[in-house]
Image 1 (cartoon, rainbow over the protein chains, first blue to last red):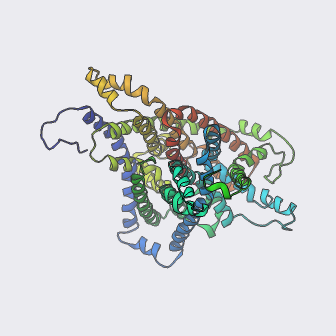
Image 2 (tube, each protein chain N blue to C red):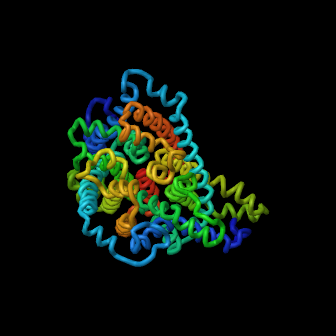
Image 3 (tube, chains in turn purple, cyan):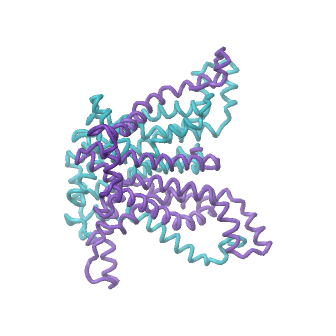
Length: 288
Length: 281
């Protein structure tokens, strides 16, 4: 812990100095139970079952593992895109609301966020199963004759994952849209800009900090999804976290599990650093 | 909608979009409620008949009851540890002379952003070495790691909402650091602390991955038991548990709304969102 004035020699006790020492207990706790375990994962990926890059050769060589990593990135990317397309108009609507109406809208956004992810995935199972809500609806509308098999499948995974990630896209978008000075839009209007130009040249550029924060947050989180792809996805939608859990917990192949986890850790850390950079530029968002 | 973008888009179209959107957001949570009162023993839709037998079965089943008890026995101490350590770290970063405060902040928030599976396979051997695997303490520590950033973010927001000059004034008037904390700082941030504590408890209550690796049959939590049931056999008993948990989380949200007022609800809702995100779909 570097404190200013340390080099000057004389240690003068100040309020700020005393407070800085408070970081010791949580710092030690995180070192022992967070950073040390992560380091062990990285080390283990190189030494188990024997010293070398064997595990990485397996992960990145021909075989199913590289495909799982690609599937993970692909699914996370598409989920992020879908979230952005759905959340943007909604965030626009929410950002214009005031008072009681704003509160009500925020509650609608926050309630699903607060429902357990396991439970929501269970809810989607009821919707997508053979005798589920969707199949009953399709048949009663006469669109299909026999029940369609949605489970396991990509549709259920995307519907479930987008559902979980939407609030994380909506909240930063609303935060940044509420900060936009609406008189700029009126100025564009007065100067004769048609609505699409007012949107493309004024509103959209000003909302970009929220877009980039939301995109980074949703993409980063989607990479680590476990419950939704495991329950609704099946073998064709195998994602990294599901595979890591299976390798370690079921097949007890810890070396390979750790190599996959280290790869996932690297990708997530890179996006996290990008996210922090974006946050720093836009101080209106938390986690500066 | 005059003067802004909306004047070309008919308002009923926007209203229809918003309604459909919220129907989508609420569907999976609400669909489980009618299923839990089903008279059949399988989960086809629409449920036929009405019965309370799944709730009765739940109340009588020792396995479900002990899982529910475990969730509280793990969630409450985990939230407590997270509250103490999270508050300390927020005080250090917001009110301390740290040269690398940005880096410190990024490192403290990291457990919230990282896929839990990586932490889980890392903590497994550590807990094995410490002899804490499958006991309560191992998973309590794991959940405290995940809850700490939530308390940190919530308390930091509370600390940022007033000027440090208040504390300096108290110290100048001769208050000891402890007295200053108890009489000046704590009253200003207690809502942030309570809100962070609820977030940390909720994160533990919903956490699956660490529970899969660190708990045993005796310390199994609710999410883990639900998970095992979902992979094996689907009966409306899971719907009954899910309905109860849904009601309970609404209660937590209402509590948070009360505490959140002190910490600027919008500011608090995003990190709170990330919290649940790291519970990882």
